[in-house]
Length: 275
Image (cartoon, rainbow, N blue to C red; front, side, top):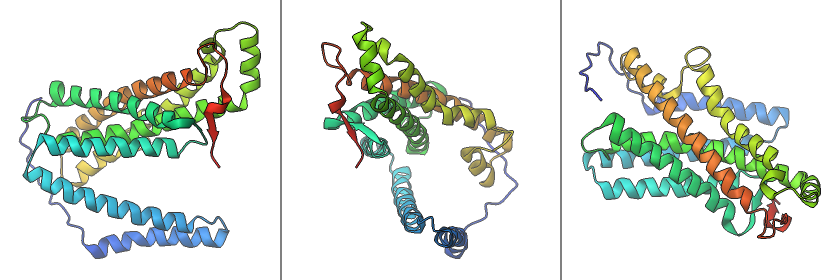
């Protein structure tokens, strides 16, 4: 990748704590509307906002330290923690899940393989920064890949497990007619993959016409020339689409085999409905 010296005429507007407090008024207004309408979401909105603030402040401090002392070990450790936490979020969002930790294992392994492979491809082949693991590029890139892949896998696996649980009688009837297990659930598997891909497909279809993606918007606000911001956004969209697609397909494929035993019988006891 060619290094470009950017001449930026704009100055970056520094945000103060009072500015962030004013932005929090939007959250407060949302809580009031929730309370007034009886939706009962005000506690969740409040704690989600607090959690997001604390997490972002923490990662900001960590990245500040990593930028000053770039170290492969610390970058690897932070990346591993991010993957493990994302795997937990995948399982927590499912209405029906595989028992015995298989839901966590399937989602985490699929997300790790797809996101890491895609991130390494971008860092080593496309960006080619020296060192390639510099946190300025590695952590934000991996974070965007994990976030979008996590959403896709979570939606795909939730759709698959819910559909198998709700259509278990139909699947058993197809098995009784002699169909192989993977053929019996193929329509459900294909639909789960399609569901998992919907967010990123919508994001690509709407980019630049309906919405300005978050990374591009952030770069423009920080003073980056729009054309350079667009280049990075196209790169990120393509990487996210590839990583999400591979992750969803892998997670659905791994999970779909856990619903059957070696004799290709449907094992609904391996599905745990969320209480």
